[in-house]
Image (tube, helix red, strand yellow):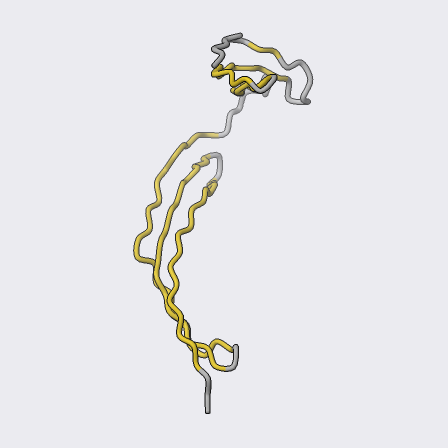
Length: 111
C-alpha cells in the first residue's frame, strides 16, 4: 500500500529591486501571489505545481549618476527618547566618511 498526501498551498511575496543600465538606475517594488498543490509519497514530493495568480511591479524611483563630487549626504530620521514617541521627521546632513552629522530642521512633536 502506498501512502499519499496531497496538500494545497498559497503564498504572497514582496520585494524591492535595483535595476541599473549605464548611468541610469531604477528602484522597483514588486508583490506577487499564487496558489499551488503538491503530492507526496513516503515523504517525497512526486508532483508539485505552483502558479502566480497576480504580479504587480511598479517603478518607485529613478535617477542618473551624478557627475558632481559628493560633498554631503542628506537623510531623514525619526526620534524616540525615554519611551516617548517624537513625531519629528528631521533632515540631517553627514559627510561621506560618516563624520559631521548635523540636524538641519530641529522639529519635535511629543506624544
